[in-house]
Image (cartoon, rainbow, N blue to C red; front, side, top):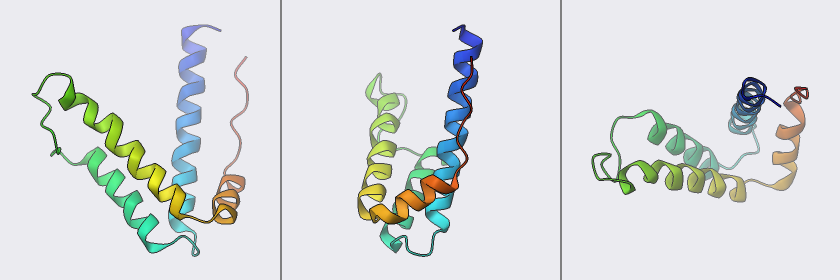
Length: 98
């Protein structure tokens, strides 16, 4: 598989995950704390401030790689399995890129 195909697969998978988190946030049975954590993850991703400034070498760039997945993980743990599965099922599957 070439680089272009791998990037296309990665982009499709990313779009699928974004659609899943949007469906999870919109679901009426998702707990409010999980919805708040999803908003915090999005806000931390797009807002220009960080807990650890980016000008600090290595650690400044790595904080996004730790904080955002942690917030998403906590939001998923707070959400009932049935709600997560319903949201996952509502998102169309990415076709295989071959």
